[in-house]
Length: 195
Image (cartoon, rainbow, N blue to C red):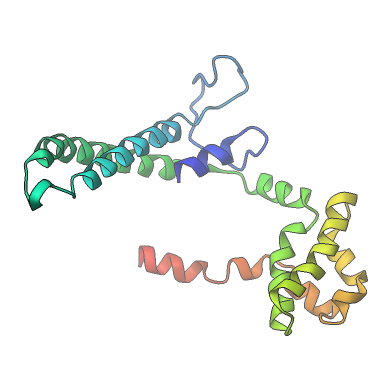
């Protein structure tokens, strides 16, 4: 989760960021940057927890089914790992409680692709029409690469593509190339989590 915040906060992505108070210092070398300090810290904490997990796994094989080599490790892991985990959970909670989201920038970034992110949905729609995954991939990729290399609009090119149009009508293309299906389970997810 913290790695994703770091990625979304990159200047060139800019879709979300940690709260940044007025006058706060970001990058010491690049004054325009707002560093995701908490998320960077949490990525480091995850490395510590990973190390503790590895140590605990190495505690499993004991000589003759019983020795006390694991004891010294557990005496460090038990308090340290739980403290790190408690700290991390509290910190990540605060990151997401105060996360600033930029929907307009998200849309702008999606628009840069000229609809290419719909290629997976088209691939699946072709498979549902009876094509093998490999054949559906080839048909979709032919249009996608033409758009990618030529800066063309994906939906427009899909509607002009004869091999693809054998399987999908213009209406089906339009229905497939919307963001609606990505959000169809959002309410259910929120009810399950926050019920």
